[in-house]
Length: 357
Length: 201
Image (cartoon, rainbow over all chains, first blue to last red; front, side, top):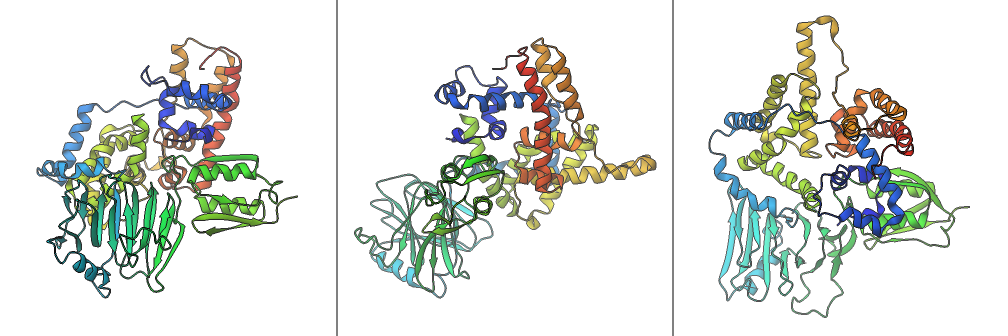
């Protein structure tokens, strides 16, 4: 659900759903916008302005290609490139498209297969009395398979996924080296655990990215949606009381595990994304806006807490127009305006400065 | 509500499809082709009215992508990559053809055909007055580049970053092109609205 409350005129103008409404293209039983306006009467001016400008700038479509010309054109290209065997593959790819927003993208290096054998040893221990399932992909193309719990996995070349025979009964644990796409079936009773070297990632149903290449000094887990728990493997799995090494990540937060120091740190992802939206609608305009409101907006947009001293900054206002600047660029500009600095501390942003006159 | 959900997944889908295409996944190529063929065509004809010419350019583009699939880099977005490549090819081809046809009339200034729907909209509502004429005049004054930027932003839903990549101009210029256009129209448009002849709301 987008946070339309914070939308500027231009953001509304770029919102496809809003435009459909402005052009009378929504079905008559879709009363979302009428209801929204009733609930947010203070936004009526912005809505009016956006609606009228959208109408004024609507581009006349050039309908000069017919449906059949388009499908013929596509077929011509397919004949030139894939010849006749393209159709057979299309279903194989379908689940990927459907599950894309839920898909978990995981890339794990070879490191436990190489010099660090701890995970392999660990795997051998816990599964010594069971049958082990091993999926290995030594081919040149990714392979896709489904686990008994319904989770789907696409294993990239030179990758391996292992799990014990009891997978799916009480717990869901897998060991990964290489790279894989995970589409984890949601099941709050049985969290999905992914072991990568000394780092464990726990999932209930969410999307995130793991990078753990052998040549890198660290492993990182970046969260896009939902909640993810990350902890060091030396913590006993069954022992839930020992929470000291556990990190809970929310969207736009990242855990970095320094292999050498065995240090697990919480920070922010490299490029925080707006949570209520695709990257397209990131426009923001401030006109002599109180800094507390500016930070509020950014907090809402990125779901990241911004800490600052309200008394010190009480006299600061900001006038700035943002479009596709990322969060850090926005902060740089705001901080320059109010002569402050920011730091990322424990997955949150802290603002330091002496305030304004 | 489905519209909004769809928009949120497009980027991830495209990213995955693009990666799959680089690994020679035919299905991924076919999906991307079907998804963007018409979009790319309709962008192309705004530069050059000759349908067959544009069709050839689009066909060459998609064939080239398949042939070079293993050498493709990562892209900001698949859509902006396609539009930018087509734009480049059309402009190159067009000036090459012009050279053969009429060597005197080579111009770097590429036409971009965008007309606004507003007239049709107003005519169906049977309104006509002075402020409207002014508004139309204002719309007529918009440059080709402004029209293209507006088209890419509000019809194709692209970000400033993507537009700057497609049009080959810097980010600031894109922002300015669009803001200036909105400013010019806003003034007259609100005069129209204030005159009370039109109730869009």
